Image (tube, rainbow, N blue to C red; front, side, top):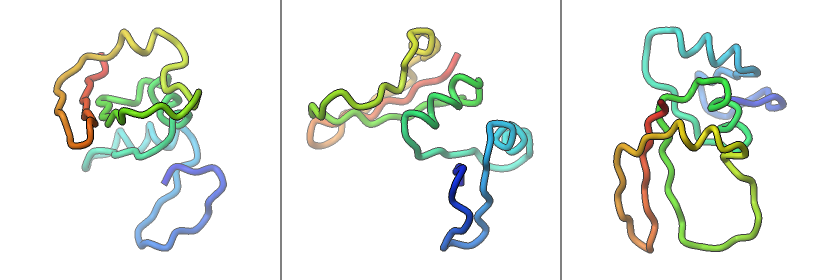
Length: 100
C-alpha cells in the first residue's frame, strides 16, 4: 500500500510503501507486476519518476468540474503510445497506453 499516513491494514500480507525509493526497490525484485489504483497525484509522481511501464484508464463521459489533471505538464502526453482501446457500456472507453 502506498501511503504516507496509514499504518495498519485489515487484509493480511500488506506492506506499506512510503517513498518512490520503496517503489524502485520493489520494482527491481523478481515477481509479479505492480498494480496501482490511485489518484492523479500518486500516478503523476510515478510517471515523473519513470516508474510506469503501462497506463490503463477508463474514460467516463461526464462533466464533473475542474478536478485534478493527471498530466499537469505536456511532456507526459508525448510519452504515451496507445496500445489498445475498447468501447464499454454506458459510453465508457477503456484505454491502454505504453510509456515510451
